[in-house]
Structures are given as C-alpha cells and as structure tokens.
Amino acid sequence: MRRTWLALAACLALVLAGGGTAAASVAAPAGDGPPGFWWGSDSWPIPVTGSAPYSMPRLGGAYGGYIGMTGNWEYWLCSGGAEHFLAYSKTNAAQAHTNFVTYHKGVGVGAYWFMGGPGVDPHYNGSTSEASAWGAQQAARALADIANGKLFDYKVVWMDIELPGDTPAPDNGWNSVYTSSCSGVVKQSYVPTSLDRADFNGFANYIAAHSAYKVGVYSSAGVWASIFGTGTDSLIPHTYEWTYEPETTSYAGAFPYGWCLAHGAGPCAQFFGGQTSASPYALMWQWSGGGGATNGIGGFNGDLDTIDSTRQG
View 1 (cartoon, rainbow, N blue to C red):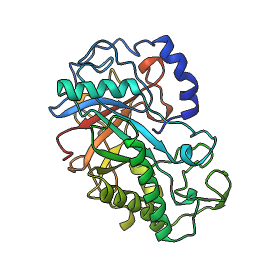
View 2 (cartoon, helix red, strand yellow):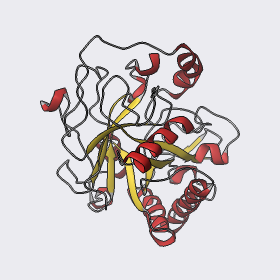
View 3 (cartoon, rainbow, N blue to C red):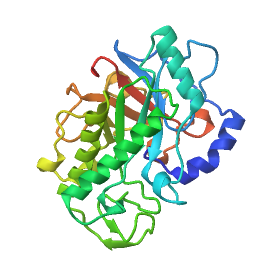
View 4 (cartoon, helix red, strand yellow):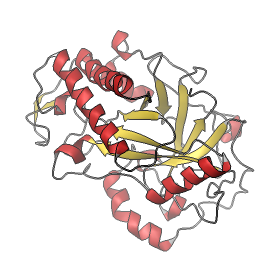
C-alpha cells in the first residue's frame, strides 16, 4: 500500500532471493508496546525467520499480524497496468496465523481491498445511487475473495483509499472520471465528494449487511481531504482507521512506542475523517515502508505496522 509499486515488484524476487541485510547497527528494542500494541506487516513479504512463535524481524517482540491485499479493482476489471497485482504473502499470513492461533500473540491475518472510486465505475452515470452500487459490488467481490481459501483472523475488511499515481487511473477514480475503467483517459477532471462518499458507504453498508465483519479504511489525512473534502462527507467517526502518516525509513533507530515515533517522543500518528489517535476506532498505523521510501527490510523494503489490539471489538 502507498508505495512505488513498479519498482517494488521488479526488485522483490531479487530481494527475497538475496536475503537482505540490516539497515543499521542500532540495538533492537525488546519489542512493541505498551501492552495491547503489536508490530506487524502488510502486503509484500518481509523475512520473518526462525521457528514459531515468530518474532518481528530486526525489531524483536512477537510478529503481531499480517494484512494482505485480498483484491484490487484494477486486477479485477483490467488486463494490465501498473496496479495489476495482488500484494499478498502466504508465508507471512501463515506465520501471523500461527502466532495468533497457537501462541495467542498478535491479531493474526487481516485483509484489504484496493478500492476504486466512482470515476472507474464501469457504469458511471453521475448519480449517488450508482456510486453506492459500485461500492457494494466491490465489497461483494472482497468478501468472495476472503472466502476463497484465505486465512482471515482479524475481522476488519479494510478499504484502501489512496492516490497511487499509477496507470490506468493515477487517482483510482476518486477525483477524475475515465472514459472506461481501464482506458486511462480522463473525460471529467472532477468528482463530487457526495459521489465519493456514496461509493464508500456502499462498500461499508454491504459488508455490514452481508457479514459479521467490521469495516475499516486505510488512508492519510492529506489524501482523505483531497478526496472527501473537509465537510460532512469527510466525517467517519464510527469507522475503523489505519493511517500511514507520519513514517520513517529509520525503523531500527526511530521505531514507535504506542502511537509515536522515536520511541514515543514523536512525531505521532495522524488519523483522518475527524478522528485522532485517542479515538476508539484508531486501530493501525503503517509507520515505515510506504511510498516507496526504502527501509532495508528484506534488503529493499517492507511495510511495518503498529496495531492496537485492545480497541477492535
């Protein structure tokens, strides 16, 4: 999530084959904290080695969870493009699942859906009803993907709402309307926030109506405001959140304690949609590895997350 996908995908096989080296000779912490907080990872593989119970690489403490891409609007609808992949590690998923089920450590395995905005809806017509239907269609596909043999312990279905900057839709259809889902050709450089919110609501409402799972969203304060504005359409006081700002490439030297980097000294996690880290719906923070900013995990890059297991109920 939120990374230079092409560079990462191209380097990944070489990275895993080479094994990588530590990014810095800084003493590793004893583990995550305070109690109830876990460190984990998402998307592409990181080298969790040794035997169970598994430990967080380079940082110590238990490997506390793995969140993988269960589906992707572009992978679903298009035949190619920079986003045509599923960022999922069966190995990391199995390790997080073992820690959770056998050793009662962490939250296990979760899932996210790489979300398409109204502008890549194959049936876009400018109405909130169609935008809502498009969100519901994506939710139905996400639930089907989860049910198709993937491990799933952490019962939050995450919407990944971001502006990836890649083809075929650099904004994933949140701020522009395309001539077709996969064309890459913009026909309208504006999407009302009401349509964006209808898409979001359609996904959330479908998950709530057709499963026992909770709904969450991955984004950042800046991206969220650029899509949903700062008015009523932007407010999500009762939706679980996973943020990715701020971040650090110095995972060994500036690892967080709780919601703040530099061992708790700050800067601290910034949530969005009217929420702060004090909210009971603030669950996760991707604090290193996003945006293609390499941190050296696995020799190239790894997405590292903080998870507050005390809040999700």
